Length: 119
Image 1: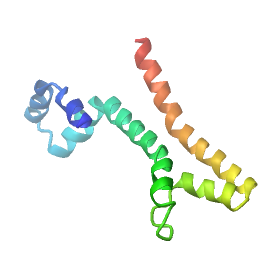
Image 2: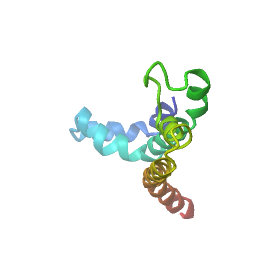
Image 3: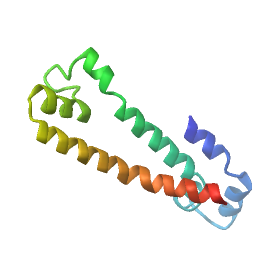
């Protein structure tokens, strides 16, 4: 829904002008719609990423990763290794890697937001 709201902010005049100039649907999408809605798409992606990180409590309380490993998440895997399997070193390493992967996504987004905020 948020992405649709972002798409509705694209002025119809821009799309009409591109169609008059001969742009096809793929060109409209790649050269006009995506660049003009880039911030919205990135914000939605970041929100979904945060939601994915917060799923641990729900999965742990409802299924504890079962049946088998059908509902096991990264966080649950880290928990099982570090606290239940007593592999503290492996659990810590997995946590650090998980944080680094998160930062690879979050830092570029924050840089982009700060650049737009200063304008």
